[in-house]
Image (tube, rainbow, N blue to C red; front, side, top):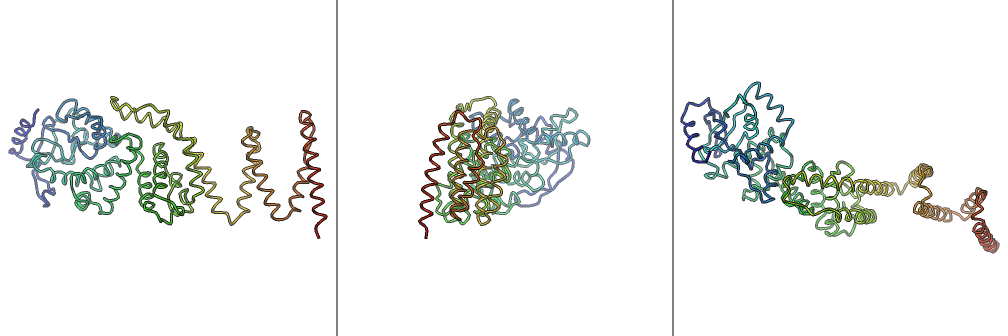
Length: 457
């Protein structure tokens, strides 16, 4: 059914007896408008509906346009609308089957659904309904796009309705309105939000766009799903850190360091790393996160750069012509998560310990008690004899020896004597020559030390 035919049919309906009237805000005035029964076959889904904007934009980024007036376009949009909130759609469908359409929709005079796309989709799934109760605006979308955009945004993004939306949609909606030269103040008024909140939405959307660009997923907004909190946190961090001089970051950091924080955070976001552990990257006062201590940050960053880039190098080139690009990229991201998460977990845990140590540096008894507990746990592990582990044990012995030496050579000698007394050589015949050599070396060092002690006055 083409546009002209729809207009003629809907005009006939507008000239018929209405079901009643309902007030809506139109051109900045509260107007009472008639409500009509409009056959579902005369209606066209709005492909830029705020509920599914990320889905249609993602598809269009593949150079695949959606003809909302075609059978195929209708099928695609109904799929997007159904999948936007399957649980809620099932509940609402059951309610409509039982009681009918409770909430009136809004359409243009050429049948484009401005408010009620989801309800119309559900009615199309129920055989006993063939009409949609709606207010018919006196214009087409092209005749007054800004006024319709205002009306659509007010209805779709009002506080009551926003809960039913994919959280990412509000950021994309805000960005699209800004690109249409709608002022931040107007957007805030239409969405029922403060100007500062709208500015925050725009900032978060910038971070989201940077993330998609980082992964070469430009325009594929479906890949932002289930990551909102991480983007909000990261946006706040970099806004505080950029420009230098933040007391929440390590001394002397630069914007290049902030860029590296952002890139590393993107890898954690890709793996859907969330909650408190994600916030250890840069959240709060400097003593509470990795970016607040230069030594900890450099260690954390080095470990990350040693392990994560090789995973990216092994990834296949993205096929943007894929029939189901969202599923393809979800699979790609899941594979990344499987490979990267063990390291991401380990790097977080290792540097959380460094944060703990730094916080308790004035309480050495706490730190040493924790170290003793850790070693007691480790000594029973089958990997304790690995060369890399033994290397660290030697490093630990050297540190403890320096501590005892600093306090008193007597304490260190007591410890050495205890160690010598505990040595047994049974069943070590294969090491006999080396053991004799080390014994001779110990005798020489003991003789040298004895002479030095006798010289003391």
